[in-house]
Image (tube, rainbow, N blue to C red; front, side):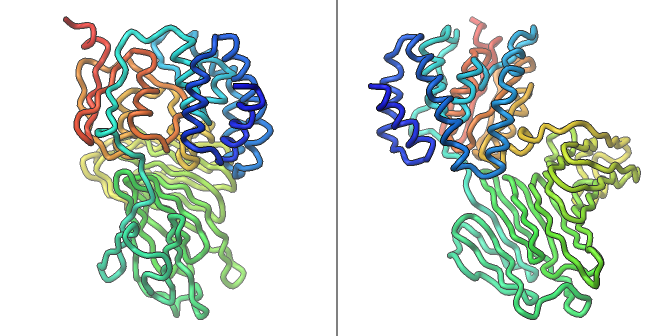
Length: 430
């Protein structure tokens, strides 16, 4: 393949105009190159990606890409640490930029130009592969009626409290106020709706006040169809990204509150991410823009976040969205603030898993949520840690192949929805 030919492929890929046949043909050709030639191709890809990719990216995507590339050298140094880590995206700095955008290219480069892993490849027969998650959610109306959004047609699907509820074709539920809707005590009717995503599901909601919410898998948002004129309050479980709209009534800005697993977030207009998954050690609130006050409801302790900061509240399993303690009752809650890893915490909104010194079981928990699978562990897996970005748009077998790359652990797909994780210690056993 001539240089002009693979440049044309790169341009089409970066514009998302390539075909699967073209991608496969390129990878087959790339695998035939020697290391010096492959290195030159990777350099060309990196140069072209800087030229073409920004034109097709959203502001959030451009921010993510720039942060990834800006920290390649820093990540490369992490390989020199003595503790075992499984490098995903920074095998080489110039390979890393391409790996984020072209997983198949990364696989080919690594397979042919680095030492082979000492374990077998993951079993990934097409018949047992698992597709990535998609836009799926269940809407429960105030009267208890439920609507499976993936089954509902586009357009209006319900009406409640002077609000038309519409489903768009891009995975968004829109609460569209009618002409006589307003945030006022006269129109206030305590009607609540809930949007809940299952495993392998995600969804976006545009609330009647203009606030945008993006729900990750296994998450739910409960909210009033008509907001209170004193405060706008919603309840969250799981993970969501918020872009809160500013609402003024009689010259007063109406605050927005998010209640989630023992903490309350109060904002007036901002962008932030909240992760409240009960299997994580901490509830994490990451602020991008504006300002928020995060309050731990058991102790009453609170912190004021600035953009680029993250609060950590010790997760007490058993609390509901209102903060009532269950099995975690009596455990001292702690709230702290640290510098946020913005691109990492928001990677899921841009279609990526992000791992940074992440333990194997936490990695698998993310895969469980997104692919709706069961996991079986064989042997001790306490030492494996992962770093890097992996596309959430790839099938499960492709993601497992990336994770398995270093040879520290092996994955086997059993049936249609189960993964066996075999530790290196078990592989070494007779």
